[in-house]
Length: 378
Image 1 (spheres, rainbow, N blue to C red):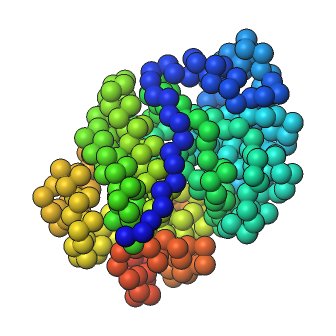
Image 2 (image 1 turned 135 degrees about the vertical axis):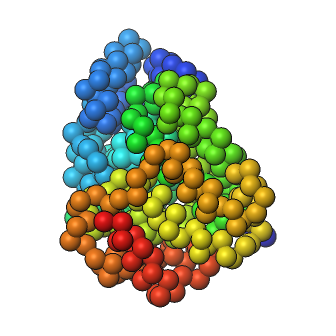
């Protein structure tokens, strides 16, 4: 088969690797000015100030943007862009929201354009974005190794900015930074990473290079996620999950996702919900239907999880959710949302690439059944 493979950014992995941020930043910051986009919780913990001091000692002046929470919105990206103007480096620290905001801001601050100029790939990204260092503190989205960036537009719908110019120049994977993540978020984020790796390895766009990363991510996550949830101080488990998440990001960067992400993106367009939880619920609901295809790629993904056949995957994933104490219940914000509304969102234009990439044809009847199954969790 013919395929292309997008390169993975440079990765520095190790406990307390963030302590070396100044040396890494000096190589990418040519005017001595940097912007830090960091989750508000982490900023309050003092991590942002620590990074500022480390950079200052190396002659780099840094400004912090942390006034956001939850899923990234257009206003957040615009505010981060304002902070990044005049800088030559953007450092993203936190979960996928912080990293996506940082990567988009590195492009818009360089070009002077509004984020909406690039939404849904309407226009090519600038040829010379600001330098980008991404430091994930959750192990789930894989945004640090991906060229896809998500934010909520003015109409309340999830939009994406895509392109190689938005990718990190350097990724710092420091498992120590993930230790404080609560058990439920560790589980939700880890399951999101699992689904990234699985869908990228089994959808219509799967290719041999992407499957190298996807399968290794599945091995790491299958073997270590439960331990990371139950023993948060276990740096070996935390590190394995963090690495698995980054590998999953590299896999979806090259091969994309599928129906579970169609569902989770559609859900996010209707009410607030953690992306990892929504994706895990969508994956569990659709997996028995999906494995009926019994493709070679599904069999290979099953083997990467330590299984003998694709038919074992639904029970395996449900058991993993159980061991990680995941509760199958939608947030209260979905109380007034019906299956028809979710089905409508799953059919929305922005969610069609994920529907079309699924290895089985997703009919309208399939969508209606899937939406009803999700809404039964209220």
